[in-house]
Image (cartoon, rainbow, N blue to C red; front, side, top):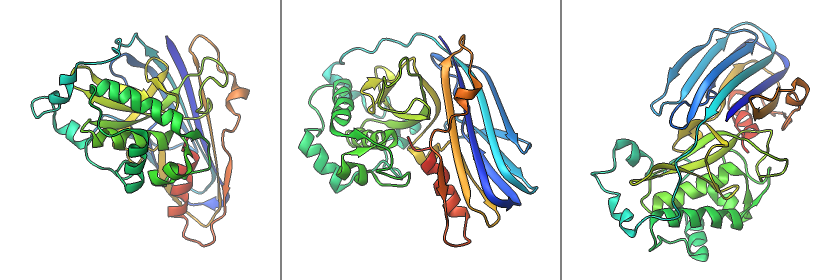
Length: 323
């Protein structure tokens, strides 16, 4: 199966700004069953793009626009091919817990076992684990993760606007509502507490039918991957209570969202900012209809009360991309 993805980010300023600096993590990864077949990126105003791979293998693009502008548009188009994913068994043997040892774990795994900015234990999380019976399971770790995936799905309602992009997981835990970013961080924190390496995945989810999943079909998505010695990295989507397989298109991986925002940047100038994001994911053989794509997913207007724009602009970018 081939998927075509188009992702546009549009920044509009209330008055001209004289410089924009931007970092992008929008290129799908190419590894395992997922193969990147094409990728294009364009900006308006045009900019010289520079690229590198970060320590986790994510493609990072960055640019600097030094001339005055009222609008910045970033448009990416990708085609990925998905091969068949290895079948994941229902369970593993109980000795799998003992395989989390120094012989099987490397430096990259240990980094995904430590608390991170958004995925960390708290008293509220500990209470949630007690109430739902999520202390370390006596069953095998795969069965424990499947149960954790289902428990988060059943315990929380999906609702945008309840949390913000920089909210700690306690906000979603108290409200019993949130978005995919919150559910991923909660699952990562619990899995790490069990001694299982877990990482955050940003990307896209293809919806076969409208309202098939709780997450929005016109936005980016997030889920987790947990490392099991007998299987390697296995994806879990607690927002939708499914394994992450051939309809989950991986863009970037990190310790949590702070490592992999789709865009991160700032500008020089005294202006309010409108940020609009549109995403389309479709089978590659089907044409991407331009008018459908330009439908704005989540328009939002920020009205800073003072002239210090940079930090507010950064948080607004991330809030718009929280799904």
